[in-house]
Length: 459
Image (cartoon, rainbow, N blue to C red; front, side, top):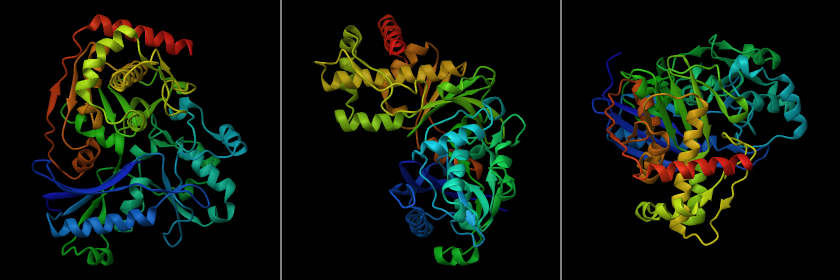
């Protein structure tokens, strides 16, 4: 196979989906198409608009094939999703929205089935954030439809299957708190046998594998005039991690920001992870276990924006001294059920007369302190790289560098998920980064941080 010159990346996040073309030589984004990732309320349960997404992906590929053109396709998607295929290759059941909460009796039955944390390094999470819980729910609640299943594939690989007709699973998605994978042994967990699905699980392939070319019928529909290889694909947070694994010596940490803020301790060990605080092992593109932690920081930022209006960084930065002096605080969690403080509900402290700018300053401090907590829980060492939307939030970055008191670098450019997926197919990346100098009054920040932790622990 000749080396591609331009890569089309299908990037399906929990909130938005996009298709973009990257230049292989420079990593530059040449063109992009976007749409929201819609959740259909039901029946039979909240699920993703797969037909709408497919129509969008195909339309985008047709347009981008005309200009700027592409000669390979790579894929990245959010985790906590799998697809149940019938014998015709269609959906045996809709692709379930992982935020859906199942009936209590089904949740209790699953709790008795799932393997211990020491086997999977996958914590018990809310809703369908454990893919094994989704499959158990679907099997229990819809036995007739479940009986039609012939293959189960992870979510990035489903879209690769639609493009190539080749079914596969892949370890970054299997290792993403599914309960279905044993990171230490690089094999399926005991849960697949308890659920009776081992024979349904498609073969496991590397994220770097080419599964095949776009099928001839689809290639004709898209206007492709030559074979276009499709790479197996990768879980989005691990796509963000991948560029930093190339040519960088451990230990270091990566904070990947989007709907979720995922922290990775590269070069760390799994010995001290606490499943009660949303720490876990992810699996990188090379199949290696990586200590990780997370909170839904991007979703919380959206909620703050809806409440406070858009963030004005200059005004928020100017308000920081007042926030530090008056200890105006936001406590966890604006999104319940995940993160290092899963049982808490957000409260404003000392904010009765606070302005919008002061609340935004406190919110940026909150996001930095939540990130610090997540990094501490996984024993992260060395410098910290922040990529994704939060890499442009200067107030957050300054606060984070100050509370960590070690090098923080903001990685700019296109979102790391798309670039990481492009790297699978040979894109050369040159994402610029900058050192963060931090907030000048470290004593004030540290005093605020200590008080915030005391308030949180009291709650």
